[in-house]
Image (cartoon, rainbow, N blue to C red):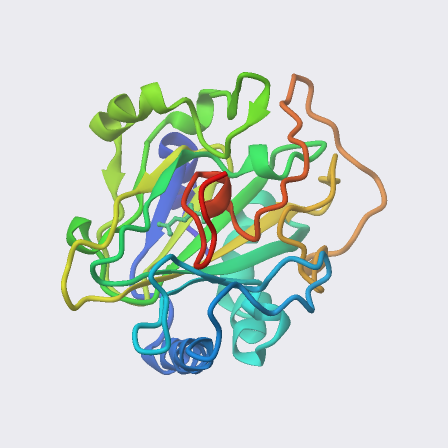
Length: 292
Ligand SMILES: O=C(O)CCC(=O)C(=O)O
């Protein structure tokens, strides 16, 4: 599905944007489901939905959440509870594009919805995805589907081109902090490209590409993004997945294997962390939580 030029752009920059890939009808189905979850969140005052494979809350609420002002900032593995998400992520064009980059055999790892509400201070600190889920090899792609039009004003993601060839520690004082060293954030800000795009655009990002993003500073523009992590089928986890899906290791392209491929090198190994989502790990409390 991808051209040689697109594949080469992915390898050089560490990401590739495919414009207008997901039709409005499909996107509207995903958003209708998300709207329903936001409505349901009004009945809760702390994270909820613990019927997940790892017992962590599926629905993560930002500070300031209330029935009148719902702040559902993250849904872990919407695919586990919604068929429209399954169809999009497991069938059709998207798995085909992934197979062109890391195939022919590809499995689904996990996914999540990130919801930056207008005026909310939710930000994402610069990090790469592979350090959260180390595997025997690092052939993997994170897919970012823009559910709304995005730019810096409503907190689009920012990606550091070329950073997939660099390596940054996600530890500080011997502890996994879920981001690169904060003293590097200014440098990354200077180098990063903003993922400016229209709803329906898809970005395919190498799992080593450093990325982050500021808050949604607009008064009235949503910033909703679906994020899905896929790996080559011969990559095997070195530790349990941090956001476990009931579809973990589902083959979406090619066929399964029981033979692991190993990449030589070194890798930081995190301790499993208790927070429901990585926002907690990055120091942004959920509704009802207080600083330790
Ligand atoms: O929502 C975003 O802009 C990026 C989120 C992200 O990188 C993540 O959840 O791992």
